[in-house]
Image (cartoon, rainbow, N blue to C red; front, side, top):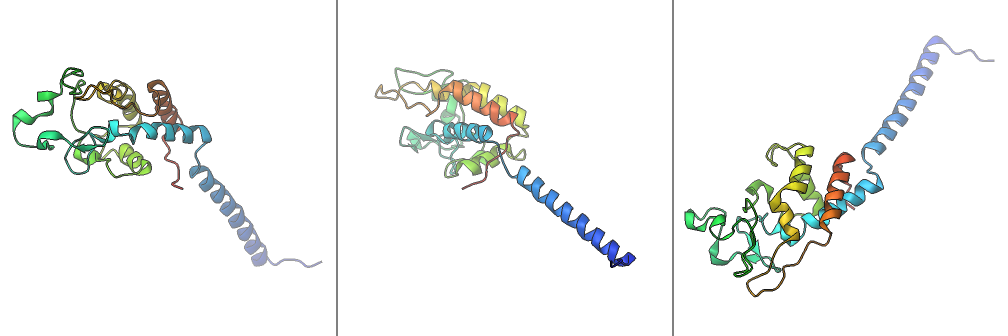
Length: 197
């Protein structure tokens, strides 16, 4: 029977420890990079709403609010800062919908901050932007959850009124109840953004 020298024993021990450590690190990486199926479904349900025109129209990438089912530029050449107080959003957009004129309204009607431009982004890019505290108004994930599920302007999407011709505006593709449930589930599961496929 061959006897190992002390340096061979130490080398073998180091190799075994390194191998076990590598396997553990690999398994930890797999855990970190995975999202459970329920959280993933919740993410996609939430993002089905947040990528809908009811949300994206007020998250423009060019400082021009969009309107209508086709997301055309806002009438009257409205921009984020026209420099004229008469063109402030609240001049026309009151705290509730005006079914006589077709002008939509909700409390605190306004464009999202310019750093929260979602137009042209995919759901994963929007999610990364939403949880970036340097861009989201320093909101924690819990603050974000409250904003997304309680803010009256966000929830207006399910009560969008009618357009100027009296046609009902399209609702988001998910019920308000299912959306709120999905947002809360996604946050509860750690607000993990799934891998893009």
